[in-house]
Length: 338
Image (cartoon, rainbow, N blue to C red; front, top):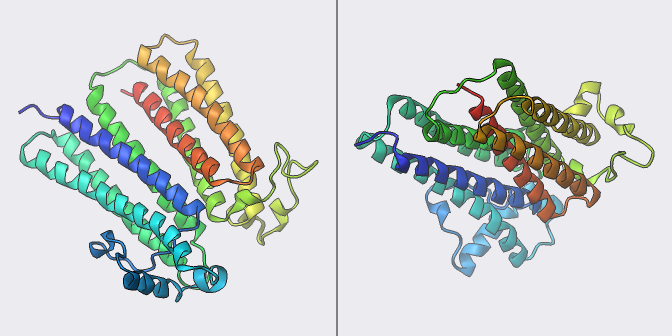
């Protein structure tokens, strides 16, 4: 039987699609403040939501024992609790489903010898990333069940960034199988794209910081942070020592996210301009063109998300834009890698 066949490629691309859906639902879960509605972790039985009034009351009573209800949502009705419960439950169920979709076909392909040794190694890395992602989800939720009714923005960033990296690596493995041929490339240009990817990942991390700290709900002007001020004074006086402003302060984190948006945009424009002077394949041209188009859309989505004070639909659209931009960057880098 032929190894690394089309079925293996479809399996990987389905995995990419499911991770994308997972991130979208995770974004909705975060923006609707639904992530702490399920405080107990049950790997198997947790797949089935409460089915009777008695089970719903039990779940609601458990929710009442934790800070989010006691400090923020003590006016909640059972119906309001059901609404936030749904998004967190769906997020967790999709996570479990992704685990099954990756593990069972992998074992089948392994037993039927449809994978080459390099692909087996890459698939094992994917499974480890998926397991680590699940652990980070549990670890993140745990941080919001103690005193502060909100999850740690550091743990949120780790959880979200790992999801993006897992997607990018899954996509990369699929591309290795779709395009097995070698390419003659410019090492300096490939390194430029690599730097672009690194900066984009840093921007994704800061996007998670902004989400975790609810920093998008302040300084809702553009390009100034407030009327007449490009840098608001709270950027550098909110925290002590000063460096904490840029990793824990709402104003500082939002400022860094704003600046990185310009850096990512500028970097991709440079990549585009340099690529235009090179002899490119059709796929390389498509990757470069997609980068420019998507980064422009993503930049505008970020601006409007700030101006409109993060409506749920726009916050999700901005996260989806980051996903597509990472996809385009991954594809472009792959097309310029031997």
